[in-house]
Amino acid sequence: MAGPKDLDPSSSPRALLGAELRHARERKGLSQAELGQLVFVSGSYIGQLEAGTRRMQPEYARTLDEVLETGGFFARNCSAVAASKYPAHFVDAAESEAQATAIRQYTPLLIPGLLQTAAYAWAVNRAYDPTTPQETIDEWTEGRMERTRLLDHPTKPMLWAVLDEAALHRAIGGRAVMAEALRHVAGLAHRSRAIVQVLPFSAGGHAALQGALKLMEFADAPPLVYFEGVRSSRLEDDPAIVTQLRFVFDLLVASALPQEKSLALIEALAEDYSHEEHP
Image 1 (spheres, rainbow, N blue to C red):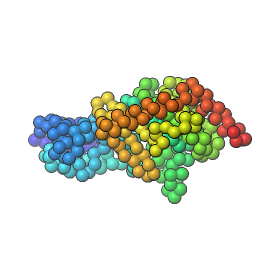
Image 2: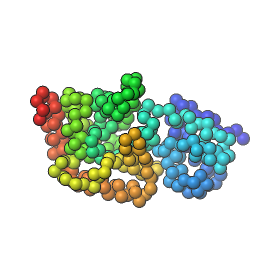
Image 3: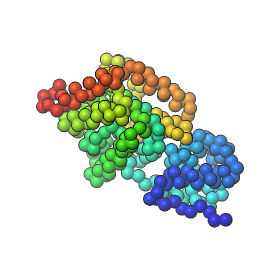
Image 4: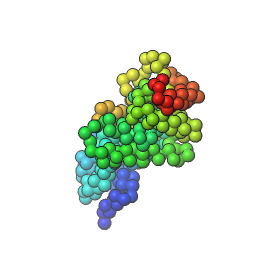
């Protein structure tokens, strides 16, 4: 019997790899949990690989080839999903984000990536690494702008962003860049393409003082939570952790300004940035 053909990198490699994994698993008569035990991962992780919400790592690909007797197919085709326009630590999160039906995000210091303008994104990427060649910064920025096109769809994903007030006052890229960036955020909210709230300084201590978080839900895979640090990140699918972080986000929403007042603050600060005098 002929084995599966190698993937076409111009198609959607991760989705095709997931479909082949499901086919090979079912051919062996294994459940996701049973295959997970053989590969030493959770059944939900296998489900995420099959749904295309997680990227297959080379070490797991080799084990899957052995367990499922696929003749090295998964090991060979891992390279088809490896290329990316995103920094290495963010690749998995960006690809999962593209599959999400709902995204809930809190950012303490930055405007979230999906809400950024090109000028703001370029300034952020340059600040991350002042020694990176400009062409790499341009590539990262292009990748981020491609991400924002997720919001071109009229209804999905559902995006709910809570921005710390500090993110509005940190003048990344200069005053003109900030004025444009804040107007862009307000415009998306006015067009009902995102729910945007501001967590004001007056809220004092809150449940996410230790950092940013992003929760992602999917149509056919378990939810994920994404943590990001300095040049590092982690995706977590443990149900207990996801549930706990969803509660944290709910607490942030409760402490944040209502959307109408949030937009009024964002637009007022955009107006201030438009003038030469500092507010």
